[in-house]
Length: 433
Image 1 (cartoon, rainbow, N blue to C red):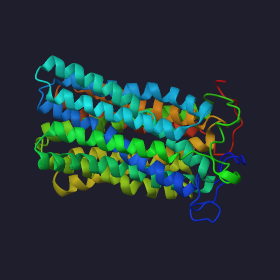
Image 2: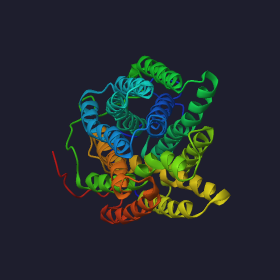
Image 3: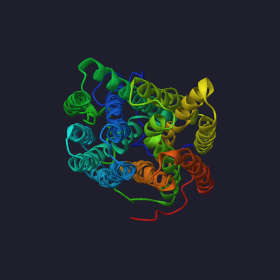
Image 4: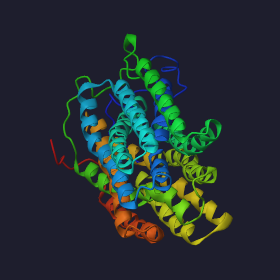
């Protein structure tokens, strides 16, 4: 497969393990390790929000329309803030410090959620929950465009998808472990509000560590000069070109269907599968997210060898098929299909971000990442819960039918991939800039 742009300022690094970057500040190993830790904490904390929605619905007696607004506000604020974050990163660098600030925002959101759960009045509970969703949403907008741009700058084209897959697996690990850890901590300290505060403290500690690591610092002697190619003198030619616009639309429809569905799944498990608000719910959510721990490195490895567009189409079709399968199969078979759904669905990060690296205009990788992941993937997360809530007609009994309808929307969105040229063929001018 023909690869994307071969600009010497990008991809100059050796693969991890090569002598040229081993153990040095700004080396690929350091970039991958630090951003992976950030991804673990970021996604673990961010994907706590659907669990908080279920907690508020079950314990706080918050209605389905309010939960819909809360989830939509979380994802919408994340999507809207991502574009600004990407532009600031492309023009000013300091991606590590900005990622730390984002994780601190997530920690603040968790503290507000804790206050909402403990609020005695339903009106106060609702106001605090909505504010928490907005604060956490802005905080969650930072990691993905900045972390991906650091990895893209540190790795050559042939190794980017593999590195992004390994990094993405850590995000999936965070999503898988946090719900179960929440119920485990709750059992130890017998306070759900106290457990949420503990997770906020963990996020704060990770932000401090990320701030002091200076992952995007340029080492002495010129080694690692491929890092931060856009922040120091590279012209920003465009905000968005045709291929990035198409990829953003594909990402939005895929996310609208599947990640919007994931936002409602804890409520579906409790209301329609009879799990209740218990450790069993945490194990089901862990099973759902655990698929991405395997799926992201596997799809990242394959994307370095097989046409990336085909891999994205395969993953999307797999997620749609397993959605229908899980909703119509019970028992052990249903559990297996739920795990497979997680494997296919949570493979999007290495596939989408490595495609962005092939198509993004030089000097705008963080902005392109923010469009595809922020406006596309996170925008789909914003619309998905709202669309599912509307399709369900404010009734939990209609959730399964809503999930099936949106799975078909994701499959239809794959038509956009036919409009993308083979990676490396960049004959069309940017739309903007």
